[in-house]
Image 1 (cartoon, rainbow over the protein chains, first blue to last red):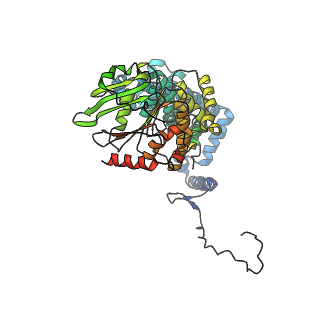
Image 2 (image 1 turned 120 degrees about the horizontal axis):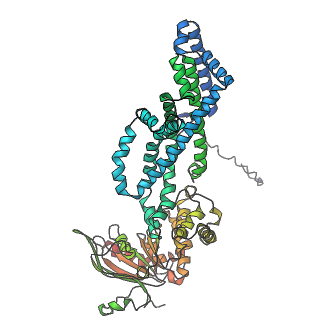
Length: 291
Length: 268
């Protein structure tokens, strides 16, 4: 609506009324037509559901004596947590398991990812190892546990080995997949620029596999924790798995659940750290695309 | 402006061995045929490219244009005929531009340009400094720290070109480098990338299906017919040598004639 000087003798022309399509009311919809509400709404709803669920659970337990013993109760879980923290036992156990799982996570991923990208180098070695990898991948760790104890004893090493064993095959498969997915035209380009295979590997294949390797980190975070805990089930003197086993044998359901809660929280913490690291390493993936 | 010693001389058979002595000739194909079993990709193709000349090969799809480029680069060998490539013989490296930019997603613009030298073993810091100095030449100074995913197709091809040129290749092979871009971007890149290349005396062979583009930037246009690919005609075009910008060429006197003639030759 410009404010132009009215010409004498000429009536000002009103701008034509432009019909506007009213914006559809209600929540935004994405391309697939799904509704989008803010994250805050989801969190609030989550908390509400959890609180209601816990209250219902506690009520059910209070009105039935046997229920508390069989299913545990939120109050009892809370008590187990508090007393665990007080005595320091929960902290010690949590730290023990955390160290085992973290070491297993790192060792397993380093060995697995390194082996996976190395397989890219030699097709012959890859073909040779393929059945072995499939075989190992299908073997449950729990089955290997007793053997591992025999081999490395009952100390922390056995738990780390178990944790790493749970991780290594997955990390290997994903890293190899990432390496194999390198754009063949880019390989050809680097070769035409005069790169020997080793330089192609360093400049192209390795960074190109990082996306898959990071995906592997997310997958194996939980696996590493599980591996450590299974190790503790088989033989241990400390750790969350040890606590779960002990409480379980005493039918102390609430303590079991309390420790499980801590395990879950540790898993979330690890995943959060991985996500943050991924955002730094793969920062180009999180950039807005050009219009 | 006579073009008697421009890129296309029908060399007499007796002079075949003088290719090596004729220091000007960079690439020479004589009576090339390429057969894959029963299928003949190209038949009896001959042409030469001398230093500082820009040769374009136009033709319908399937006429073997890319096959010829592969022969020149040494990637494949001809079924019959001879290919001489001075650059290969000297053990030097050629530059390649493809339709796809092949940029590395995890590297910024300057880091991608540096790949041109890093791939040859030049230390990273040197390569990166060289790349940084090269950015203004191709209009990329403002985009030094951008990632490929943040750039348009035209910008990406600019980066690819800078990468290709950073090791200063004596011969440039281009395989439909701008065919994926829109008309305006294409014109811009022809003016901002290919023209400076010409001015610096570079030698190039470009495959394209865009007749206008071929006439606008080349010294010689080789017209191929469809399956099997044969040379329908060779045109020496004066426009680029006159220093006309690609979009000025389209207005120039005689441009339309060339387009019509070439179009007819392709269709025949």
